Image (tube, rainbow, N blue to C red; front, top):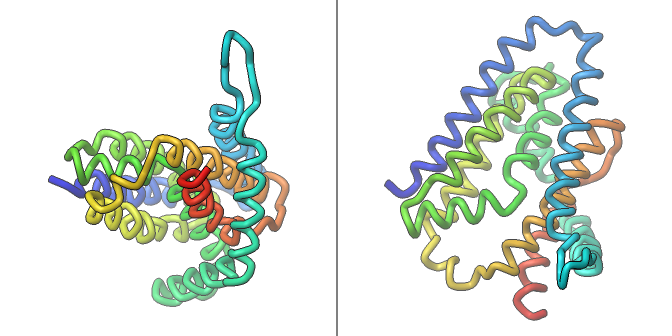
Amino acid sequence: MPGIGTIVNVFAVLGGGTVGLLFSRLIKKSMQKTIMQSLGLATSFIGIAGALQHIFVIKNNALTVTQTLTAAICLALGAFIGEIFDLDGQIMQFGTWLRKIAKREGDTRFVDGFIIATLTTCIGAMAIVGALQDGINHDPSMLFTKAILDGTIIMLYAAAFGIGPLFACIPIGILQGGITLFSFAIKPFLTTTMTNGLSLVGSMLILCIGLNLLLDAKIKVANMLPSLLVIIIYSAFF
């Protein structure tokens, strides 16, 4: 059934998040900073590994560096567009609204947890390509793999941030479900070069998320999200 991959992904997030919430009761507040730094370190290396996979390429038995200028251009243009529309502020407002709906007004970690979990699970080529495969080929295997990864990540985030990360299931469902629904219209325009570009830029954004956690930095990753659209357009013409 088309869409089963996204459904499993959503329930994996909810299940992993629930386990994380139960585990969080055993964690002392003095340990939370160390745990978040550990998550930041792991997330940073996930981003680095994904980016280097596309930057370093072996050609003629020699290691060459590629796409660095492309990534720089797309990130700069994407950040410029994101700053104009203040995507970071809008996502924060949506997170604040969700916190109110969930009756967690006093939870100071809710919005941060929701935003970090959403960006980590929704950025990258796996969500797009997996949803396309689910819609066109009725093959949800990639999304099943993503569900395992997301469930584990959300479990760790929920242990550190509380209930906020569980609400990442909403954007996951909307994004992947929408791509699966309109997969036949999207597939003809999406090339291998585009998916590789999405993976490269997405991995760099995940690295920024990791740095925010590790160093308590304030990189507005949400404002860089348009770079994912820019890399698609750039790949189509260049």
